Structure formats: structure tokens, C-alpha cells
Image (tube, rainbow, N blue to C red):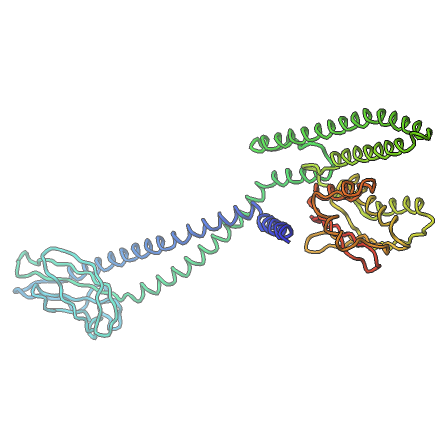
Length: 465
């Protein structure tokens, strides 16, 4: 259970890590930075607009205050203002531009017609020759921009006045809200356009990585031997390192094949000589028993040599990903075994989804299935069932028979890692040991149960992807 749980955890980590591509990661990072930049830029632009707009209003109110100053006259130490001012907004009762004049004691001495109905409690701070731009409120809570100019008329200190112009902030606020809505719209649109351009740029930039990935897929599928050098210089070191790894792996496999061939050839002749000697001794009555022991041990040595050769040669390669169609291989093996066990007239029921591919090298798969099917043919009565299906990303391959089966107390020992049938029962063969080693080299599992046909049920579990 713990091993299966570890495999499940590893698969989940692999899928979660591979679920998000590098391009998507970079896109999410760039989008986050762009969104953060927009969030920082938004209050900056709003503050810049507010400051600029207030300066425009200040300049406008200053110009209106100059209009009042130009129109003001002092006669006999009294302020005189004309009936109508040049700026018509001061003359209209419902206008939004208000004008006030205060003396140096802070008392209101004149107001424009537009300010006749306004109740604004404003007290200028007369400090002599200063200007001030501020906000004030009337009794109803309406807010106004106010511009206050302190000035001496006719060169007399007694003729000091504060010329105040006011304008409601409601117009400014409505313009600011409209600006903010437009700002959200334009920044949002700009962000979308930027993200689209980033996605296009990343897509264009990752074309090279896609080409490298496609070449790796071709290498894994056995369609090419090396990666090409037609890549940007930033990736050449990676592709050349992979090519060196592929060449090294290919040379090692070739060396393994040559060494194993030499070993098999060098052991074949001594074993043949010993076999011949055993047959000669078996012909002699006094040595027949010793000759039988000798032949049994020679046969066992031959089996062990064959097993070790298969174990060394059927390992999973590092970079090549194999996919073998299951049905043609089963048809070939069953056809051969039908001829060997023709007296039994074995009926084989094959239940496969089409197409059904097994992620194992063809020679290893043939060795694996050959051992399991040979056991099934040898031990069955008349019926064998072979089925394959996928479950939770795994390929499940079942081989069942209607033979005597395997005792319950022997099942765990047979499939336990490190247990060898040939070690426990000399002369019984090493088929399951070879099957177990092949599956271990490909990260698979072998389990043994009871078949609905009445015999043994061997189940192979392999990662389908």
C-alpha cells in the first residue's frame, strides 16, 4: 500500500508540475507585474489630473479676481464698484461664479449679483499682499473653490481689501468622475492589449522550444537519433548536451550487446563440452546417477546464464519512449504456443480496446508476455482470457487461466520483490523472475490473484503515459 501511495503522490506532483507550461508561467508573471504597474499608475494619474485641474481652476479664479480688482475704485476712502462687470457671470443671479470683497477687518463690503443668495461664512485672513487658494463650504454644505487676493488700493493702508472669487466644486467632481471612468476604461483596454501582445510575443519566442520538444518526441519515438543544431545559441548548449547523452547511451547499449554476445559465446562452448561429457557418463551404468546430477546442474547453470543475460539486456532506456501494439504481439505468441500445446486445444479469449499500446520495448514485452502465456498454456485446462484496460492513467493487463491456480499462502512469496522461484524450487524455471525484473525496470507492478475462470490471474500495472 505504501509503495502504491508513493507512486500516486509522484504522479500527482508530476501532473501538477506539468499542468502549467513555462509560457503560461511567464504570462502569469508578466500579467501580474502589468496589473501591479497599472494599480500603481492609477492613483498617480488621478493625482496628476486632480492637481492639474485644480491649477486650471486656480488660474481661472485668479483671472476673475483681477477682473474685480480692475473694476474696483476708491472714492473718498470708500470702495465703488460698477453696476455691471465685464465678466457677465458676475452679473447673472444663477451663475456659478461668485465674487466677494472684504475690508481689512474681514467685513463683507461687496458681493456680485451671482452671489446675492449665497450664505457663505468666509472670513479672510488678512496678512497684507498675499494670495490664497482653498476650499470653503456654505451653510448647506456645498463646497466651493475660493481664491483670495489681498491688495491695497490707492496706495493707502486703510484701503486694504480681500478680493475673493468662488466656484462650486461640483463641476470639478463630475469631471473628475468622468475622467476616472475613462481612465479605468483606457487602462483596462491597454492592459488587455498589452497581455495580448505579451502572449503573441511569448508564443513567437517559444517556437524554438516547441521545435526542441518536437525533436525530443521524435527521439523518444525512435524516429530520429539526435537533436539538430538549428536552434538559437542560448539552447545549443542544452541540445548538444542531450546529443552527447544520446550518443553515450547508444554506445553503452551497443557495448552491452557486444559484451553479452561475447559472454554467451564464451560460455556456450564449455557448457556444450560439459553436456557431452554428461551424456557419455550417463551411458555408463556405474556413473549414471552422478551424470544425472551433473546434467541437472549444467541445465541450471544454462538457465541462470540466460536469466542474467535477459535481465541485463531488457532494461529500460533513459530517453527512448517505446509504444508497442499489443494485439499483433499476442496473436504471434498465441499462434506459436497453440502449436506447442496443440493437444490441449486451448481457447484464448482476447479482450482489448483498440488500439491498445504498451509502453515497453518490444523485445522486453515479448519476453514478459511469453513467460506469462507459457505458464498459462502449461497449467490451464482449456481456457485462457487476456484483457487490457486503462484506469487512473495506468494500463491494466490481466492474463487468466482455468488451471489449478496458486495457493494463497504461496502468492505473496511469488510476487515479493527479491524472491526467485528458481531459488526456492530448483529446476522449476525462472519465468516469473524475468517478468518481475522487466516490470521493475519500467516502473510496473505484478500482482497475483484468483481468476473467475477458476485458476490464477496475473495482473500487470504500467503507467500508460
